[in-house]
Amino acid sequence: MSENTHETKLVNFAMANNTRRKIINFLENGCKSTGEIGVITGEAVLDFHLKILQQAGLVELEEKTVKLSEYGKNFLKNKTEKGKEETADFSQAKPIEIARIRQVLPCIADSSRLRVSANMTPPLGGVLKLLEPLFTRSSYSDQKDSLIIQKGEIITTIYGNGKVSIRMIKNEDEAKEELERLKSIINEAIAKGVAPAPREKIRVDLKEVYRYLPQTNCGKCGEQGCYSFAIKLMARQVSLENCTLLKESKYASNQEHLQVLANYI
Image 1 (cartoon, one colour):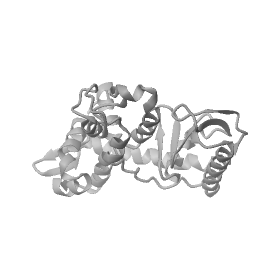
Image 2 (cartoon, helix red, strand yellow):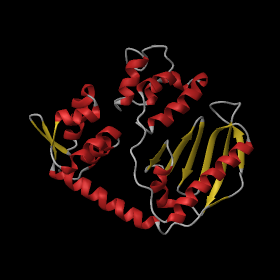
Image 3 (cartoon, helix red, strand yellow):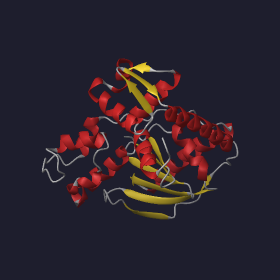
Image 4 (cartoon, helix red, strand yellow):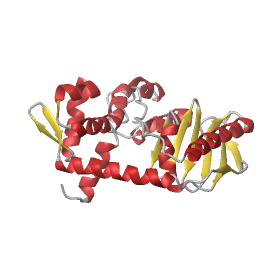
C-alpha cells in the first residue's frame, strides 16, 4: 500500500477507534477466525470494523479468516519501535511546577461553575502523550498537542506548551486542589523515569452518548432520531457538528460533555 494522503487518512481513521486497535494487536501473533475477533467486537459490528481495516489495507480476509497484511505488519512494527523511542525520551523529563492561577472566569457551559487557567513549567512537550495512561479517563490529541482529563464533572486540558485549563470547577480552592493533584501524579511518574504502560481507553457506552443528546428527535441532523444519531456518532460516521440543536445555549453543557466523550470513541 503506497503512502499517499488518501491512504494515510484511511489508516488514521481506522486506528482512531479503540476496538479496531484491539483487533490489530490481537492479530499480531497470527491469523484469527472471524469468530475469535467477534468476541472482541461483538457480532453486530464485526463486519463494520473489518471492512474499515480492510479498506485501510491493514488486514486481509480469506473466507472466515483474518490476518495482518504486509502493510499492517509494518505499521504495527513501526508503532512498537516508535513507542520504544518515546519511552527513552521520558527518562529525560524534569519535575514540573504549576504557577499560580492567572485567570478565573465563569464556565461557558454552566455559569454557576468556573473555568481557570494556569501555567505548568517546564512545558511537558513530547512527554505529554506518554502520561495518558496515568489518568482513568484521558485522551491525547496529536493535532492539538493536548491531554484532556476528566474527573467527574471536572474537565482538565494540559497543553504541550505548558498551559493548563480546568472547566466545571466549583471555586478557586477546588482548582488549586486539582492542580496539586495533577502535579503530584505527574511528578511521581517522572521520578520513576519510566513511561506508564499503555492502556486501552475506556469504552464509551452508547446510552451515555444518547443521554447528553437533546433527545428531541427533530431530524435536522438527517437521522431518524437522536438514538440513530448516537449510533452513527459511535461509528464515527457523523460528527457533533451535525446536531445543530447542541449549538443552542441551553444545550451548552451537553455539548461540552459530548465533546469529551467523543475523544474516547
